Structure formats: structure tokens, C-alpha cells
Length: 538
Image (cartoon, rainbow, N blue to C red; front, side):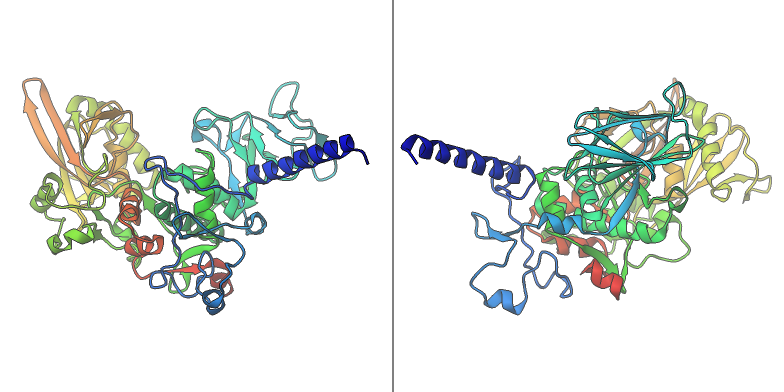
């Protein structure tokens, strides 16, 4: 072979190697050091805290005797520049996890029923109706219409869209954050009289890739993201078992009714958080818990029983002050059910909690009585329809009873009737010129006092508006009367229902150096972090 041919062969070989490495990188088989946006340093995982990690957990934990004795790192582990170890998951393992079926809602999460469905794929894909299979090349569109000339003639069929290899399906007919979302796994389009139901079936671990960034910013510390991943996985498995969406042949939906999925696309850090906690769930007495989480606490978390109005307490969702460790000496028994104590807690800056630095930690809203009165009847009626026992009307004897609602008239006063030990308001009395109504549960109270048009002034002084619920039910009320009329100033703290893991609190704990298992056990009392397969087999 002459020299020219040898040179040509060498060049072609180099090009082939480059292509192989590039494809491996794009598919995630080769992962570079991930940099944290705010600190410009390599992020490393620490899953070696044996005191925090339950001994039965096998994912992300190399504490076996053989691993300790060996001088050679096990497969799937590499050292970062700091010397700590990062778990790199075999992509095949994630693909082999249990399947989950997710109902995909329309744009804005408005409905399960789609009037039309349009999709494509980055690679070739097929559309099957159970009998016939139609092949589509990459970039081609598959369109399903309920009505019109292009409507499918056999409307009772369901269609399975299956991409080739690792290609993802792009939904062209919906938007998430002004983008057309990509989906791993398969898409099922099923005709119903109300419209098409769209279901995404994929492995649980792949599902979590797009839950984590939709529920928590991936700019957070990796330990916080890992705690979020374990919470989301626990919630998913619990919902699969609960069969709440059985009538739709699904396990959960992609909205806040369950946990938000694919509103923000997956990225390297969300995949790392999921991969490094592969299969780990939170358990209480051998059962996977419903791992509730929310945005920000007001310096205390709430009892699950108070939040969800259950007959029995939820042992792993107990009220807890969120005082930072270094300020533990400040922590005493504080009963926030006392009105003056709660006001002092909200207004005082002396309590240093994990959520103290978050902008939602403190907020205030001023409602004009006339404006609130104009929409209160509709809000009350919507809550009444959901559960008539939670919206009660005062009778002539001064007692509250369940009976049809009438207009409340002009609001004269808002009175907190019941405040829990965590500070959460669970009963609110609205006194109007036409009626007196008691509203029960934190959810209903937040809906009735929704700042739809009012501005919410947050801790930093910044104002936001157009919210369909009050930020939280941890608040107090001041009535302000002027020549212009009556106003109600509501001052409170936190964002969300308040039970379980506070995401901003978890982020602060992670920044302070806490391991994700420590974070989880801080928010969920009397729990363990275990491998899901061992739990399910047990």
C-alpha cells in the first residue's frame, strides 16, 4: 500500500473515531465536569455518608466490603478534580426502570382533551393502530384531528407513536414555556368523545429527568437536586400504586395536580441528580411515602393532617421550626397558633431559618374590600362545589351549618377562626352585609383570598401580580379604614401548602454542606431512604 493510501486511511480512521466519540457525548455516555452557574466550579456528588444513608440502599452508594478493599474503582464511578466521586449511570439501566404513563395536558395545562394532535420526531418513527403500522421519516408530521376533512375516519382507535432508537418525539400542538416539548418513550393518542387523550409512556427514571428541572431550578446545589429527585421518585411510585388516574389508563398527569413534568426540559444536572440516586425512595414503616414538597416555608413546616384535612395525623409530615443548626440555641417551643406569637414570628428578623433568604419568605397584600367583595361569591361557590362541608353558612342562632350559599354582600370583616400550631390558618370567617360564611382548609382559604388583580409585595420589595391563590395560608389580617373605604392588609410568609420538603430550605441546607439523605430525613420524620425494588419485593 503506498503512502498516499496510508495517509487517507489514517484520516478516515480519525474521522470515524471523532464521530463515535461525538455521538457518545451527545447521548450522555461521556459526561464532562458540570459547572455550577453561580460558582464556576466543578460539581461533585457525595453519596458516601453512611450514617445518613440507609444501609439497605444500593443506588449511588459504594460502601460494600469489596468496594472498600479494592484499589480499582468499580464500573460507573469516576473521580472528579476535587477527589470526590461522581456516579455515572449506565443509560441502559435507566431505560430498564419501571414504566410510567403520564397524561399530557394541553397548552397551559388547561385540559386533558386535545382537539388536535400534531407531532414529529428527530429520527424516524412509526404510527401503529394495532393492525397497521405506518412509517415516517425524521422531521415528517403525524396529525390527528377531531373534526374537519382531516379527521380520522375510525374514531375509536388509539395510535401508538414509537420513535427509532433514542430519538425523541416533539409535540407540535402544545407549548410548554413558549417551546414545543420533546418526549422520551412512546406517545399514545386515543380518541374519546371529548377529544384526544395523549399519554406518554416511558421509564420512571427518564420521567424524572424532566420532573426535577420543572420542580426545582437546576442551578441549585446538587445535593438539593438529589433530594428533589428522591422525593419525585417516591411520589411517582406512590401514585402508580394509588391508581388515581385508572379511568384514563394513566398513572399521573403532567401538571401541579401531581408533579410538573417537562414544563422545563431535562438537562445534564437533572440527569445527574436522577442517575446518582437511581431507584431510591423514601419509606415509612416499609411503605413508600407520598413525598409532598413545596416552594418555601415561612420558617416552619405544617402538619400534613392540617394541610390535607385528614382524620388521622401523617407521621412523617409533622410541623417543625426551620431554625438553622448554628442558631439552634434560639429554638424554643414556639406555639404559632397564638395570634400575637405568630405576628411576632412573621415580623421579627431574629429567627434565622433555612428559608430566611428566599424572596417568598415574607410577603404582604392589600385588598380593597369592594374589589374583593365583587368576586368573593364566585370563589366561595367554586369551593362549595368541591366539598359542601368545607364552606359553611352562619344561621340565625349563630351556628355554622351546611346549606346553599347566598350572596355574601359587601365584606365588612375577615376573621381568622382557627390557626394551627405551625401558624397555618385552617378556618376563616368572612362577614358580609348579606351573609357570614366560614371557609375551612388552607386550600379553600387561599383560593377565596386569591390576589387576582392585587400586587404581592415580597421580602425584597419587588411586587408581583396575577396569582390564582394566596401564596400560603400562613398569614395575619389587619383591617384598615380610611375615607376611601375599607381595606384588608394580609401579611404572611412562605409559598405553597407547607407540608413536607421546603425546596428553598433544602437548597439552603445543601449550600450549608448537608447530604441529600440528611435533608430528606430533616423534612420527613421517621423515614428511610431505600432501594425501590427491595421495598416492592418486601
